[in-house]
Image (cartoon, rainbow, N blue to C red; front, side, top):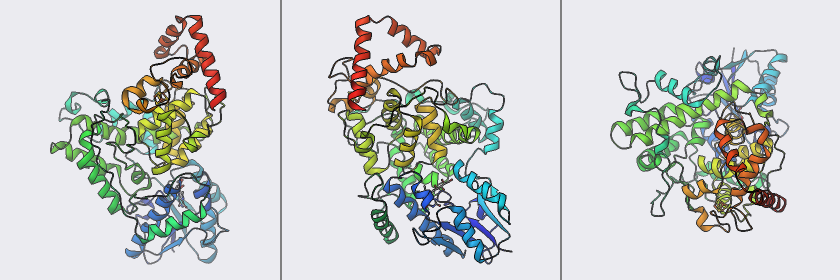
Amino acid sequence: MSVLRLILGDQLTESISSLSDIDPEHDLVVMCEIQEEATYVKHHVKKLVFIFSAMRHFAALLRSKGYCVHYLKWMERPALKSFMEVCDDVLASRAFSKIVVTHPGEYRVLKAIQERSLTLAIPIEIRSDDRFLCDIEEFENWAQGRKQLRMEYFYRDMRKKHSILMTESGKPVGGQWNYDADNRHPPSDTLTIPAPCHIRPDDVTQTVISLVELNFKEHFGSLEDFGFAVTRQDALKVLGRFIEERLPYFGDYQDAMLQDEPWMYHAHIGLYLNCGLLSPQECIDAALLAYESNQAPLNAVEGFVRQLLGWREYIRGIYWLNMPDYAQHNFLKAQRALPQYYWTGKTQMNCLKQCVDQTAQTAYAHHIQRLMVLGNFAALIDVHPKALNEWFLSVYADAYEWVELPNVSGMVLFADGGVLASKPYVSGGAYIDKMSNYCQHCHYRVKEKNGPQACPFNYLYWDFLVRHRNQLKDHPRIAMMYRMYDRMSPEKQQAIASDAANFLERST
Ligand code: DLZ
Ligand code: SF4
């Protein structure tokens, strides 16, 4: 009998496990633009266009291969609001032996499918998502019995297991596992950043742009100048351009930020990887090939491989290992609402303004903008994890909960109390100044520590440490900062407290 094969919006891969044994004559592929997914957070409008258009192109590709696809466009059947309601509707008109779906990326969706399967007359087979290089069970095994789950050791094991950048004698190529220290060159104003790969919207994408413009007016972001790839073919083009034009400099300038330069030397392929248009293995292979043919240096290629083979897989492992509890953590008991300027960009802090405005325009920011500016500031002022997670999940075209939640709750906010990171990722303005030219264009003075013109990151940093002394004082790498604080004069300590209190009252 026929099989109903459900494809979710981030499963746009022809070789996805749910299609592996498809019988084109009898089986039905089901895809839907659906209310629950499009509105569970208020996704950036460019993210909506990207996903809907990529889904429509993928459905067309499957049809061209002879598969039968039942595709529901936005509001074609408004009463059907979730994946399972769509499946129920299909099952009402035709008999199927089972539903097959690849393991969803988000816990919320997995739960909904599992719950429905308890009462459904036919089985739902959930197949593992073999697009990842580390299976969920494999990560569980790796984690078992370890006191700490640090990415670096996971990454080394993955390098060994997949023989990537390894010598024949089992040593890391170049003698080091990690060239992180060579990935922090400050930018100079004279860098020439290649123009991003802009894919001209075709008719399908134009139709979706009009649809999103009409139906998602209250969602964040600008629709202007949509240029994301929406097919695998174009995503490969973006990857190729990255390898050729940016990868050689990616390593050196990974942490660098420049005024009005959103793209820098980053790859901008996260959105394609995370929805299935590109595979991590082929991206890694392309970078390795560039290294082997002397087109890119080791610090760039290793840095890129570390993001994909290490960080990306590790983050997914942490997510599935710890859900659903992970979403509830709030180790530092942070309670503040997200400031309005995360949506409007209306702030005199130039670094934040740059990153928010760019995010509204492009649905993209590179990792150090997310971490050191947007995340760091939110951590410093104790934004509630739920509020910050919701923001990151909605504004970036590459964001799904599996990747967003551990990055934000673990790496940025330390809300998990140290499952993922060894300490909160907080800093004053000096590192932003070192890695960017934002401070040169700012109302505030990064070198000033106190007073009305002082960079808010500076006194907020100390105030954060003071507020969380009980939770953080015993941490070996932070204890030193407490000793520094304790050596400050009472007047200095008072100035920090009052500057922080004034700022927080005025500006959050
Ligand atoms: C992110 C997203 C959006 C905005 N819309 C849809 C949609 O309408 N239909 C769909 O199948 N998927 C969408 N997605 C991606 C899903 O949220 C994603 O597949 C699940 O979160 C994975 O568990
Ligand atoms: Fe940001 Fe402070 Fe630099 Fe202004 S001075 S850009 S607020 S770090």
